Amino acid sequence: MKYFILLSLLFISALTSSGQTPKTSGPNFDTADFSKKSEIAQWLVEYDEVAWKTSDVLMTEDKTEIAKLGAEWFCFQDGKKLWHAVYGKFANDKYDLVFHYLFDSAGKITKTTDTVDQKFLNTHARALTTAKSTLTAKIPANSPRFNQYIRQNSDKTFNVWMLPAFQPDGTAVFGGEGIYQIDGAGSKIIADTSYFQKNFRGFKTNPPREIWLDYREVEKPTLGSIFFVLYYKAYFTNIFIDNSKSTSSIIKDDKVGYFWVNVEKEEKKTVKPN
Image 1 (cartoon, helix red, strand yellow):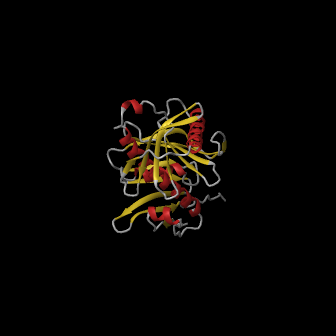
Image 2: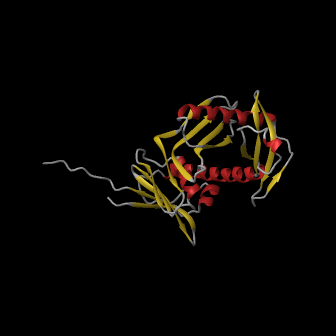
Image 3: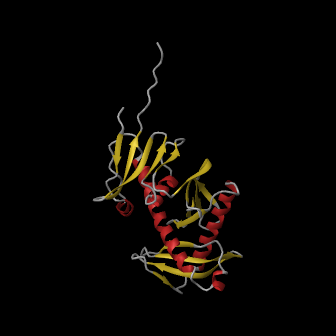
């Protein structure tokens, strides 16, 4: 059997914004599943950029105000797709908002005193607390640091993703992803599609080189593995996701930008003795 090259000829950004699926030439690769996860992963990368850059601004604020913060910061998009980042503390079942930033399409960050609906703040913070406690109960105490991402759905439930952060020592970690759907009150897990390998593993980002993510125990690329490739693509010469039936990587072309290449592995045939 031949290897089937599945080329996503759409830019990553176009894939996300248009909702289109990659063109494929292989018969078995689950393109729909991959495209759905890629779209979420790209949104998470955008979220991460907002969090990272606004937190840099946050660190220049008055230290007495910074001291009021807890761990329940989060980002969200309004109806006009403008990003917001809010920093505060969730205590006594109420969110105390301390800093609120706007992040526009040009990357400009503006501090604002605009009010945010209190129920909106409370339920988001409660959902993050629920997800974090669930993750903490699942992983060892000495596990790598995680980042948190949250998005409210049209039915008012929440999706919360807990993914390994870029570690302080410059290590890019993979092998675990907390993925939770939480009720509208933010207090109850209603779906848990998390995935954890036996151990967390990682690569130092220096020097740049080709790396392989070992996911051979699962058939399809996980959301966390796709996020890893998108997030760290500039740090390595190439990143391969190695699954049981396929490999996936992202290629940069000077003319067309980044595109995915998904390769179905050759099926091994067993020959019975006569």
